[in-house]
Length: 236
Image: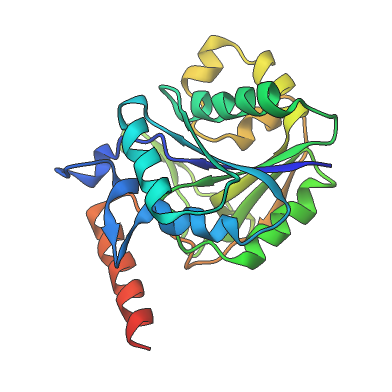
């Protein structure tokens, strides 16, 4: 079984507001957010390659950052797609073209802006994806989840069954490819989560435990929280 990592850095960061660059390239402490995330994955020897998939307009910038901060030869920078799942599939296409694919090969995918990922979470994903076609990292929902439409509540699900999705999300590559190929264009247009690709194809998606600290930096408030965490670690 060959295992790959894919760092999804294709976002434009529109919810971050007026910034000079996409959020994954913003500095945090003494390094860009993306670099701190990539470094966590270079600590895992079981990855054959670590793909960083970025916007085409930022390809040169991303390569320059990797060259400056990362010495691991497994790290490769490639261009992403227009949407998250297009970016994911671009990475899969690169893996297949460069290394070939065996039936059991797997990929561990992660948001570039979740820099507080832990070794335990990565280990749990690798262990689970050896058994299941798809794996999602989750934490139990703390707040009550409300489903609504047009400013009206339609359902309040039982909270003990509700979880908040994080990343990594890990997949058997061939099964993910097959599932994505079965989607209609209408399904692809509204697909906001990669694990749903496998759910729609009838594959079981296994859950592994995330961490509350495994936050995704999406808004200016998230960036403030991340800075506070980094600053506290530096002073300890």
